Image (tube, rainbow, N blue to C red; front, side):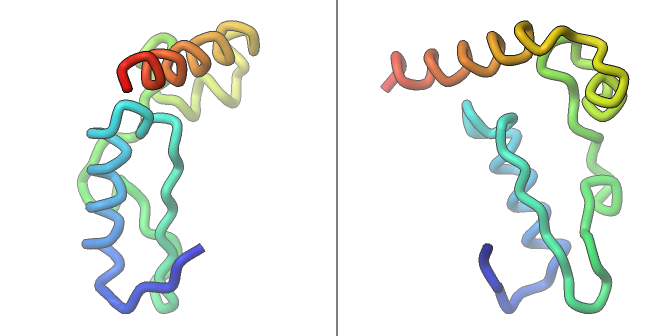
Length: 88
């Protein structure tokens, strides 16, 4: 947890950019909470919702419905991590 004295929407935009640009960024969930406004989400910035790692549908829908077997999701995550370590 970090406390940052800066505009929350700009911090969230930078966090979302990291989540999108880093090879492992899709595995991160960098939340920003403003003391005055509360949670600052992607939608408040005009950004798209997170996408599912398996089918690219909205992640929250797949997660809530348990659309994909846990083994498939874990396998996808493990492959992303393995690919990262092989690359470096």
